[in-house]
Image (tube, rainbow, N blue to C red; front, top):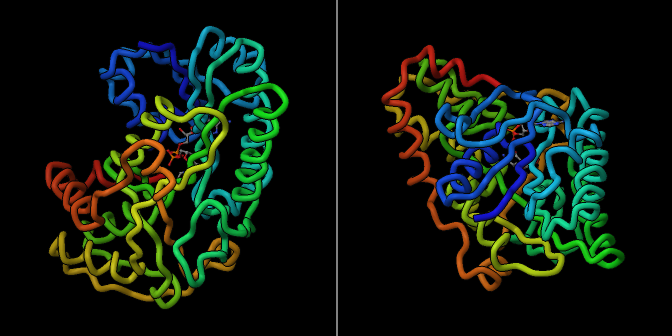
Length: 319
Ligand SMILES: NC(=O)c1ccc[n+]([C@@H]2O[C@H](COP(=O)([O-])OP(=O)(O)OC[C@H]3O[C@@H](n4cnc5c(N)ncnc54)[C@H](O)[C@@H]3O)[C@@H](O)[C@H]2O)c1
């Protein structure tokens, strides 16, 4: 049993992680400013110390991290449209947030930070290949640049202060409880309401969708097993076009919806990459496991979950 801080623990990935950590018997503190509401289930919320506060505030960060052996730093501003509209808040949350978390970890002797980085750091690098951690990267958005800055900052802190850390480059995580800032829940919502499923561009752009439980496994296992300062892809190694995703969701939900191609808003241009697929071999060799839930299986789990939900609850998932 450990004392663990999870920033952004009320968010999509954070809430699944907090659930796992509490089930394992850990003593968990969640720091979240509830920018995106609270996705923690009530019984989990009752079993953690929940602090509503901002990672940009050092006094708050110090107060919650004192005595914690491990910090999962997941608080962030994300979602293509949200980041495009709020580049300064995005960068401040990343850069000031990480400075506060790492200063506090060093001050109190925290063993390790697990940081939620992003496959966005690869930008357009994945044109002809599945990306490994050591290829030339190409971050272009404020969000991806700040994530890469933090990876480098953590490497420097390991060298200078001995602070251990793991940066996990997540690839399009999806699962139950995600809100429709992201493409999978957005397509489900459109399908279940019998609205058009709207695909940006020609639909041939690819992504590597990683199921939430596989993502949480990587978070827990790297915390347990990795020493020093490392970066890992957490990718399903399954390249899917957005059109295929739309078709699969249309088939699973048996919707009357049509799939419609629409032009992406201009503000999304920097985020649009043609291909994105990761290689998780490094993760596999380090912890003995890597994501393995096929997209079809993950979508079926979500679809079964939605069968038990009313349409009003579905619309409540809006980001
Ligand atoms: N979901 C993905 O596909 C994906 C992909 C790559 C990286 N990531 C990273 O994983 C982490 C979790 O993402 P998610 O999908 O759960 O997103 P999310 O938006 O559901 O969760 C982020 C949480 O951070 C909180 N937050 C935002 N600003 C804050 C601040 N200043 N202080 C305290 N809390 C704050 C929000 O309220 C939210 O609960 C993020 O760091 C994100 O960048 C996610």
